[in-house]
Image 1: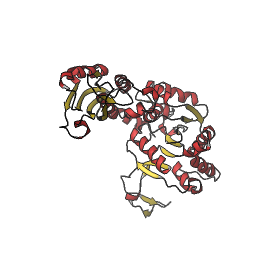
Image 2: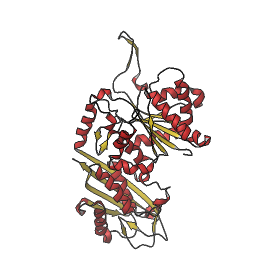
Image 3: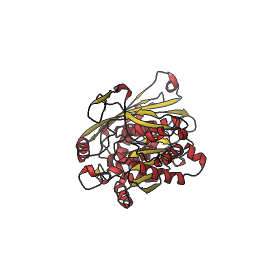
Image 4: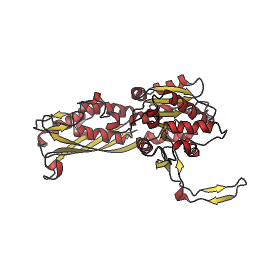
Length: 405
């Protein structure tokens, strides 16, 4: 995208329905809080130019503590600039305060026109990287996007006296979630006009559609949501999720492919193997460690190697893939995950892998700090077919099993 990417986390509500006397966004969840869990999912997925946390008046320090108490969330703050903005009496007013802040903060008119803002309820800490990626990509293409899920039950429109007014067609309905993503400047102008109407709108998509003069008639595109992306409203919403996550098994799958060229070293599983060709890549090109990294991140629902270590960032040029995997694995273990096993396949014509297998297995086990019996790697030729068979490329696959007690 040509513009900037902004994130707004709404945490300005009173949490009165929790019945605990404590704001739900500051309540413990996993290795941190509800607020830190929501923030981590976004920062694992993208680097944001600016993140705004919207809080009640005088609550900025409390919100910051709810983030900093989480080691991973604190470490991920280097992927954004963090600011706190005072919320309003309604959700609509809180969002408008955030958009006004961004409108003033954003640099040029061109940047404003191309910039995307994501608006997310901080009380939805279970949002996935897939939802975030899909929403951003759809908004970049169409100007506005919301994730949604189909309703399970048949929906009816009801009169004030309790009788059914209209029988709705379930296949034409959806339940909208957050994050909702929009072009920043049109949404700001829509909110500015909405503030002057005295009407309270239910969400930002309704405001976007209410003022087509500012949006150029761009319609909001719906992308796939997830039933797990639920909003915490009552205490049992946290308690049930905590109970659910006490014991869990996750399977992950990763793959990577690199071109083989002259003048590069050949790395596999953290071991440099003599070969006249090496992997062409932004990092050291270790396809096996990259496949393992993606498998582990996928199993833990923590993004992918590209979002963790963006190839466009110069600091990852020729990076040691052992260090990349170790960094990711440390973060995954902080979430309480343990490795049951890895099973990997390498597709390559040469060099011959068998003489190096035990050394590669030991290298991977050492990076992950597990016994070597939990790691296995096998190699296949491609029978002289396609780029791998012609010694033009090397490919690796990995499946993993993670457990959490």
